[in-house]
Image (cartoon, rainbow, N blue to C red; front, side, top):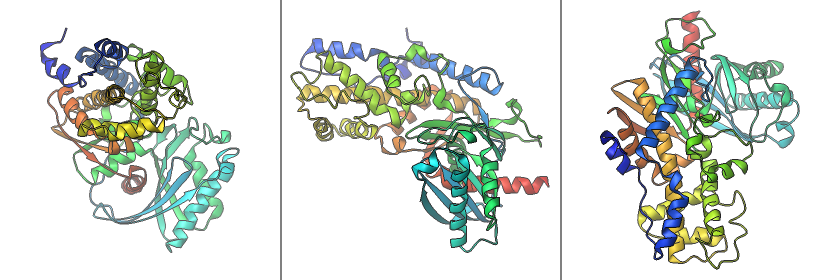
Length: 470
C-alpha cells in the first residue's frame, strides 16, 4: 500500500515498461528484476535505516557508517592569500599541485603527474614515502620555490582514521598497494619524516583528507551554499557539514566550532547486514566476483566499478534462462566477470534517452552477439533498472543529509566519472531528492578535482586555523 503523500514518489521511481512481442517472456524478465525495482515504501525504509546508521555512527555506537571527523571546522572565508600545495595519492599515478590564491579564490594552478612503480607499491613503506617526498621536492624546486614555506594538503584515498586535521592512521591499503609496515601508522608523520630526510624544501604537511572532503571544499569556491560533497565515480562516498555539538568523536581541544565536515564513508553502508532486505541474487554474485567479498555493500549497488558488472550478471542470468540471446552460441565473454564495464552501460542509457539503438547494438556486438529487436529492448531495460536503482539509492541518502543539515538552501558538490558520463543520473537525482526531502531547496553542481584543488584549499584553511590558535 502506498502512503498518500508518497504517490508522487511511487510514480516517479518506476522504470519504463518493458514491451516485447512475447508477453510471457516479458513477464518472466520483469519477475527476475522485480527486487531491483523499489516501491516508495522500500525507499522510505532504506531512508530510515540510513538515518539510524548515521545517528549511531555520530554517537560512536556500532554502525556501518564511520561518520569520520575530518577536523575541518569551517570553509574558506575569502582572506586566504598566497601559495599552497597538494599531494594527491589514490592510485598508481599521483599528482603534485600548486595553487595560488587571492581573496580565497584560485588564480593560478600548476600540476605535475608522477607514476609509482609496482616495486614501490609493495614491501616497506619507507621507499614509497621517500619517493613521494622526492617528487614533491622535484616539483617545488622546478617551480623555484625551495626556499618558500609552503603548506601542503595530503589527499590520501585509502581508508584511514583521523585523530586531528593532520593525523591520519592508515586502516588498510586497497587497490594495488600493500606496504604492511604503514598499516596503523600516521601517514602524515611518514610523509613528514621523508621530507625531513631530504631537507631540500620548506614544505609543511598541515592537513590530510580524502577526495570527498576535498570536493566539498572545492565546491564551496564555486557556490557558498555548498554543504555536501559527493563522489560518484569508480567508488562512492559523501561528506557534509554537521553541527559540531552533535559530534562526540573530537580528540583535539575544541575552540567553539559551530560546524565540522563529517566524512560518512558510505561505501560500507550495509556491511553489517542492515541493507540485506534489498540484496538480490545478482548482488550476491557481483559481490562474489569482487576483490574484497562482503564489504563495500552500498558502493557495489551504485558505483562505477560495479554497475556494469551488476548489469552483466543480470544479462548472463537471463541468457542462461533462455530469455535473452536465444540461439546465440558465442556467449563466453558475456559469462566472464568484468567484461561489461559501466561506461558501456552509460552508452546504452544514451540510446534510451535518444530513443535509438545504435550504441546498444555496438556494445552487444563487442560480445560477438547479433541481437534481435527484443534482445535490444531487454538490454536497455536491464541497464535502466540497474541505473535507476543506483540513482534512487544515492538520492535517498542525499535527501536524508539535506533534512539533517536543515538549512534554507544547500548546494551539493559532485564529482566522479559516473556522474559526469551517465546521461540520466543527474536528472533522476534532482527529481528523486526533491520528492524524498521535506521540501528542501537544493541544487547539484559539478565540482571537479576535489582531490587536487580541494586539498590545496584545505591546507589554506589549516594554515589560517593554526595562525588563529597560536
